[in-house]
Length: 161
Image (cartoon, one colour):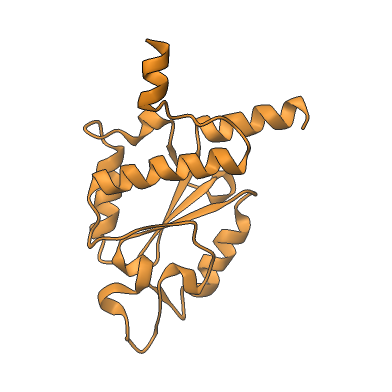
């Protein structure tokens, strides 16, 4: 692996960019995602940054159920992301269709349209659950890119002290 490729992979692990996509939920999960970005929890301390374009994103956070009308849009946005790409389904609606499941136009969760890397269940999930999911996804991202984990574990802190 060349120097430039290693540098890009290290930057992706240390500071992943996240794109948020709402496919038609009640906005409960969206409020909790915003709460994780606020100073009290501050997901940015792990280097996670919210971006406005899927072309710049490493991770896509999806909320809401997938309908017949939104499925092609979701697939198109997924195709715009650069490799390696990861998708996180946030909330019961994104995981399985939630309260909208069984509706005439609801297909189910996000996995009915695109491959999902991680699921964060709950209606809505707590900000601590979203933070834990982001932490675990950073570990998966570092393994996929063959880089060291950006999160220091308690064992590593004990060795350094």
